[in-house]
Length: 400
Ligand SMILES: Cc1cc2nc3c(=O)[nH]c(=O)nc-3n(C[C@H](O)[C@H](O)[C@H](O)COP(=O)(O)OP(=O)(O)OC[C@H]3O[C@@H](n4cnc5c(N)ncnc54)[C@H](O)[C@@H]3O)c2cc1C
Image 1 (spheres, rainbow, N blue to C red):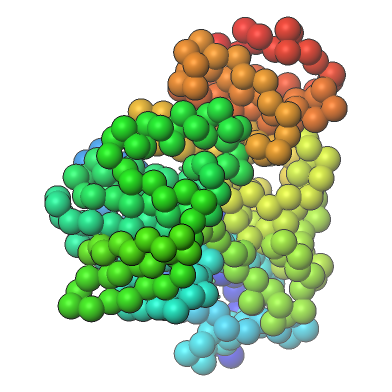
Image 2: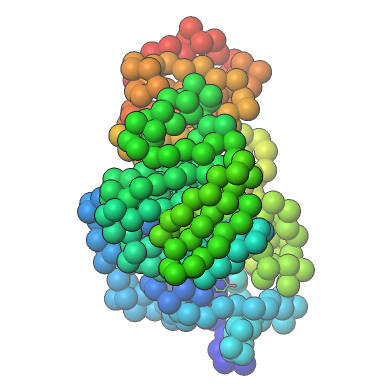
């Protein structure tokens, strides 16, 4: 065996990097190994579909810490290394290149991977299942003014990238199976308004449709859809959701469902092994149900929390994460169960632009979306936490 560490973190995303901080809050000396398949130092993903495209941030600014941070905190980095196998009985893990490491406490912060398109040509070279910095760099390299792009998927990643490419003066066609953009989160009225904005900006929308094949010839892609459209483009981006990365957990016999199952301490079914971030299926205490959350603020705080628990804090995870997105001039912050299947009450200052949408079940607030209304997340969290019955009349004007 190569080396035994007090703490091994698998996954150099936001949750993994935040766990380093959590561990070091309580343990200044224990040896930490951070192993990640990507060759880059841990970085923020939200700018990949937003600020980097608008000249508001540069690639060198998206890294969470510089190399000196890891040196100062005595973290050994193994970048470009994929962990292939976990053996909880021996407390070891092995990389695909044959290295073996031992651990005392282990964190699986392996995030998510893009859902593939299982159709002819779905695995063609050059089709971008957008998730990481290399995907951004490759896409940016070909996304010149006047070029054309097909974006498959009408969720947040697809919508943000379609907007980013449109702002960079590409001709963009979006294809997605639902009738409206972001339909899992936006109520119909908001989805219709945002979709109209996309059309006005010049994005071609093929809603209620899906690709049935991709072809590539002479550097150009051809996408055919179920409804019979044929679209030629220089770029194809697919953003049709993600799947929690659980292979490693499964190889070690850990409990998994819609994510790696953890308890209130973020510990998996094997003592001493924790999971945090996009891949963790955890008890969401304020909502009283297990959930998996794929958001930045969640990965940041749950990663840190897991790190502290690995170092002995053993505190129940109570954090209530929020999330954010920007689609052209429409930006928002949201927290809780923001699910369009719930009943909603919208308190607009300007219809479908500025205001607050409350998501209710049995007369109680489960989620809140603050549209172009900023810095009110704490008020929204409290409303959800209280779980009291409340009428639309009382909600009106509550958050401005
Ligand atoms: C383009 C984009 C834009 C986003 N925008 C927003 C936004 O606006 N707002 C918001 O709230 N959230 C946003 N998110 C979501 C947010 O970035 C994620 O929730 C967050 O990155 C999750 O962090 P994580 O550490 O759990 O997982 P990840 O960031 O996925 O990191 C996991 C890491 O583990 C590595 N890994 C996986 N398996 C192994 C293995 N076996 N061995 C070694 N390494 C492994 C992966 O390569 C990866 O580097 C966005 C995500 C993307 C992709």
